[in-house]
Length: 73
Image 1 (tube, rainbow, N blue to C red):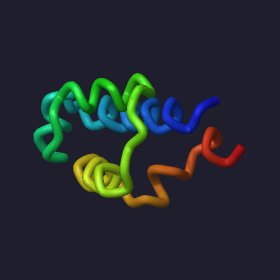
Image 2 (spheres, rainbow, N blue to C red):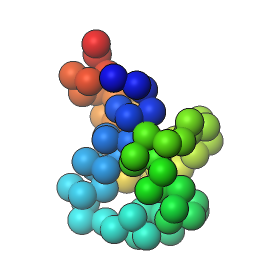
Image 3 (cartoon, helix red, strand yellow):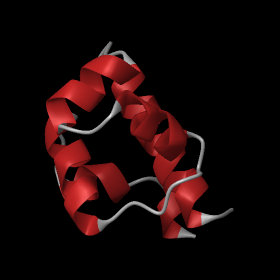
């Protein structure tokens, strides 16, 4: 699976666990809502800066974000 899809699925999973809308996550991460949509659908190659914003907005560590079986393959 493409890394962009893996990241997008993980963002969506964590966002839903935290009961955040795409708009709510976008606000917390200081990005546009359509950008979050594109990330979740694997259409964006996310920069490290945006990745850091998303991880902080989702209130997880980098380790927690990437510590899934999909990223260990």
